[in-house]
Length: 315
Image (cartoon, rainbow, N blue to C red; front, side, top):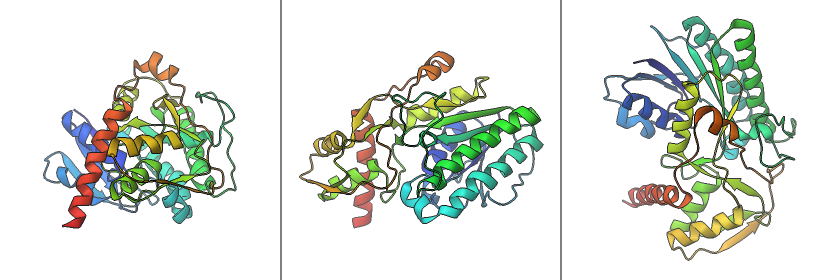
């Protein structure tokens, strides 16, 4: 049994991690200030004897009493809507927050895992994207606050590993979806599902020919655990390599929800990636990991979650 600190533990991915560690019998310290996370995500753990919540902004000094075996740094706005509204906090949590989390891991002699992102590849010029691709990022564009914060976080994590000998991991997370995503998250999955369930037009940007790859949350959580159990310090892609256009995805959502929604087209946002497809060869060979949940199965679970949330709001 271990004691695990999860920053951003009240978020979509962080809360699922909290649950997975508790199921394994570990003690979990969930740290969040709910800037983009939610109390509802972790409310089910509140009475668990091995769960503790700490209300704290990780961009300021982090102190946790007692032993800590793992520090998982997941605190950060992760949706374009969020980091465009919170550009400076996004940069701070990627830089100061990462520094503070690494400092705690060093002081506690804990293993550190950084939640990085496929956004470090920017608008990639190669396809699929493997870990040795350095990316194509606009550092002064509106998305740069997130992309460069994560790139800096990776650099700092590797510096702590090389200079201090800290045991570190870096997971590059590709588009992930599932229950506990916010309806107004701003990302394509909750946007499309909410619009379809309400019978509203689905908003597609550009002509919808940009591609994305979608993995279900359970697959990501399994990949993270396997990475933690490995000895790999360099970044590892965790994502689903099945690629499809946004227009195809919109039609898929309409089909599964049996919605009568139409599709409307709006101008493409600046620096919106045109392709996104992970090369997961490293994860397969190193971790024995690959996604198991089909797109249809994952979407059915997620749609049911959103349908329940909409019903609750109507009461």
